[in-house]
Length: 533
Image 1 (cartoon, one colour):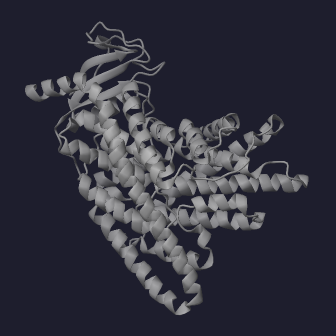
Image 2: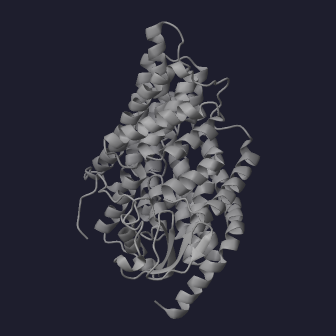
Image 3: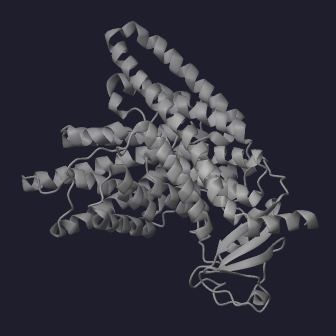
């Protein structure tokens, strides 16, 4: 390592902590503003498209012309993804790859492409959510701020996490969920340092969002009371159902990605044409299935749908989501997942009420519970599921019952050995890049923060007794509020945070080498060929 560069990185590490709070606030303002603009464009575009479908039903001669436009728009989307592959899908796996130093993006090109591609795909009615693109847009905005301000690589990574949390907060008016998701799913540890910065960023972004869109939660439910204790057996059954359905959702996502890859007769840039044409058919026949679906969730409470009709909606929404996401069109899966979960919850309560011949179960309550459980089963992030649904619905009366459903759904997914969907999508994305011969050449210095978990190999081990990977230097060990300079005799304990200096070129290797000894799972990810390095 270059001596001057190393000294500069270490000096930055010990001094920049006091700047992170301000940095998080600035990132929250910038990322929140960009995501609010993105959200506004999506809502306006989808509203205009829905109005145009109503117009077409009265002027059928326009329909063929509209389908020609959809084909062209699908081609434009595919070409955009071809030029900027990192904007495909939700963008969350790409943000994780950046933080693991496995992906480099030109921030302003990726930001522009993701904004336009997401606006076209979601605004045209594809069954994709705004949360994934919002998280990636927030992260890219934070990365741009870091680059313009010449921040160190270490500080840049923390600000990217702040941008991701701000993106989710602004997308869903859910600041706490934004922080929890960024730490639980993206950064993979609850570092107090990053927690404070990302919380500041998320709160500021939520303030910007509420200033523009108002104080109301995304989903509007009235008079939702707590689930009675004598109905908790239904929570166990519902948790198992949404757990199994969450596993099916994940496996279907991977299967449809493989399905598109096998369509050799249709070049990759033209594959988004298929879901765009499907959106045209559904827009004329069943427009409530278009877009992410937050409007549909509200309709499930205000309108009285039959059980058979709900089953039709569930199947069509599921398939439309698979075709939309599998095509690599820019867009997320959070909102479609929530809609599918909501449908399962309402169908379950209607079925039980039908058996009893009276409204025993509250459809609103079970809708909320099923959304949280379904999200948990897919993401394997129960805390995010509980907090996100609570903030999105503005309902705090069912925290206990939500926790029960999420726990059962999580353990059901564990029983089927299901992996977190974004972990698998990340591995598939990296495998695809590796197959295409793309490599990173960055050599800047970075400090990795590695938490030691209870019962791991590093727990109770002296530093000198462990075979550390090459190209890394332990510069400090954070234990509680103390930061210790280590030596070979130091005994590592659960709860310690290792601050490890390395180059960004070797950061991914060092990170992967230390995951298992520190207590993080390194199980083989399903759907990826098990190749030896």
